[in-house]
Image 1 (cartoon, helix red, strand yellow):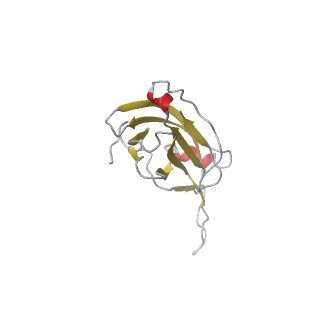
Image 2 (tube, helix red, strand yellow):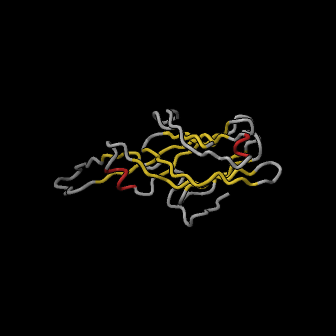
Image 3 (cartoon, rainbow, N blue to C red):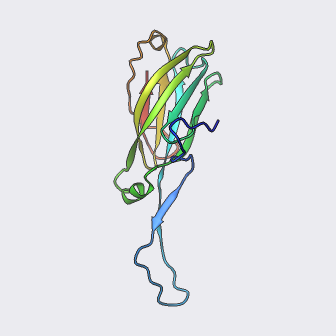
Length: 168
């Protein structure tokens, strides 16, 4: 819905490329320059699982990005998109070294009966040119307040292999 919880949007959901041209001085007419461009973005996929995976919606807020509402009542519902890193220069300079940014991500479970269950704030590592899947497990333990929130990392995604983060 365009709501920003943490302020302004410094993490737009667009695929962005960056490159630099340094110390270039044209000496002849029609001389060309080559700029090496690299993707300075990552992909994320949010999905739910567990016995209550289709109850209500998830409200997901990544720092400096627009709020995401994932409607769980749709069968096989998931949200996936591409985001630009906030530090574009560093992502480009470290493009061959597996650049990551740790992103503060807050999640609330809004049940169909109107109950709001905060699932906490998590710091998720997103890697350049990689899809990270975040699976939120909604089960009886989550309802009882025993959130047992943790992460389980596995490979998945439309971009090359990435991580899966499981929130229980």
